[in-house]
Length: 57
Image 1: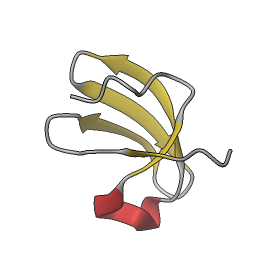
Image 2: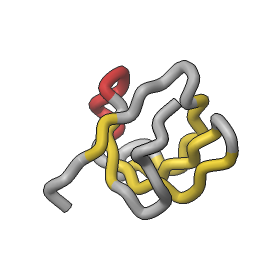
Image 3: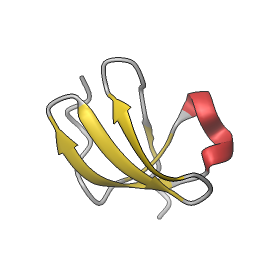
């Protein structure tokens, strides 16, 4: 589980780098909703996908 992430943070999905940078919209239990610049809104399971925080935004 990734407790260092919160809505508004910018992230990338290392497994799908072509999605681009996304902004976290919401986190409900293990479901993280992220709006990615190249793939739109994605709902990800935080138990399966480990997002990397982007600090340069």
